[in-house]
Image (cartoon, rainbow, N blue to C red; front, side):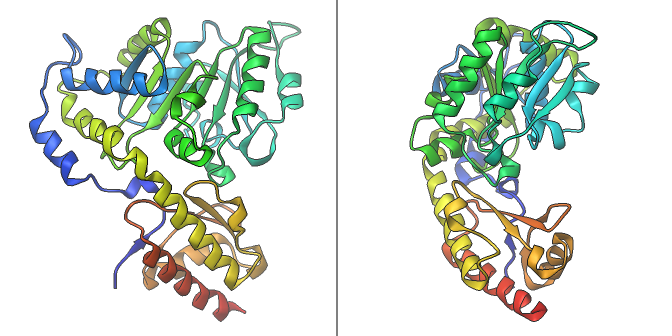
Amino acid sequence: MSLIDLRSDTVTLPTDAMRQAILDAELGDDGRERDPTARRLEQLSAKMLGKDEGLFVVSGTVSNTVAVMANVREQGTVLAHEKAHLLVAEMGAISTVGSLFYKPVPGANGAMDLGALRAAIQPKLKDGQLPTVLIEVESTHNYAGGRALALDHLAAVRELADEFGIPVHMDGARIFNAAAALGVAAREIAQYVDTVSFCLSKGLSAPIGSVIVGPAETMARAHAIRKMIGGTLRQAGVIAAPGIVALEEMVDRLGEDHAVAKRLAEKLQAIDPALANPDDIESNIIMVDLSKSGRDAAWFSEALKPRGVWTLPNPTSTMRLVTHRHISQDDADQAAQIFGTLWNEQG
């Protein structure tokens, strides 16, 4: 029985071209004169997103932490969507490492309500409240089911941030999925924020790494902060080389993953309309609503494992499915059939 792994797009394996790039990579000491392959990756990333400079780091959490710290100049509060990955899934990194505080802002589909965002902004230290030092946005939004923030929403956030002189950082772990969903180049999304972090190791299929891009001055600070937290790399080209392949060869195929996700959602809706709505699928993430069953997502996830389908349960009755290049249309059909059998057994 073949395994259908829908837990995350982080399970993707490097392509043959990536493996060869590792062997062929030109190397140097990135902590001294810089590794030439890592620099190529950083420069390519900056160019693709319309920014001055890039910085290669080992993970998404590191990229968000370094980027946030590089943007701020004083202790204060970071505003982010109430379900932002930065707030709920990064072990409080910006608080522990950066001595910064969080303030969640409500909003539908991963987009902060603009009125609530304005109300949450504290322009300066006053009455015992720390000033707002950064606004963070996320696109696509993980816990909102892979929604891509609309460009007009990002423009409104940018306008509000500029009104108060506050920088904006984007957790763009899947920004290239967002670009595919919106039908625009990634740089059109990135234009509304100061810095962007994105992952190479999700749908782009590189084995490791994330990149931060932004203005030259901010990125110089980011470089110093990376060193401070122990993130300086030596012969970084070994892991940067597949990242170059990822950006050059894997971006344009992400729409295929989105099509598979929509197909899977359609199959689930056919089993029970309460499970999923294909109209909600904008990228490669499906949130399956299991509340009608009376069982939690962890139960379903464990029950599906021996049947050959791996999923990621959320703490309640929602199960996350993520499509990627190892999941074909046939895999989606088979996964839906297996799930349907289990679902009907509970009915």
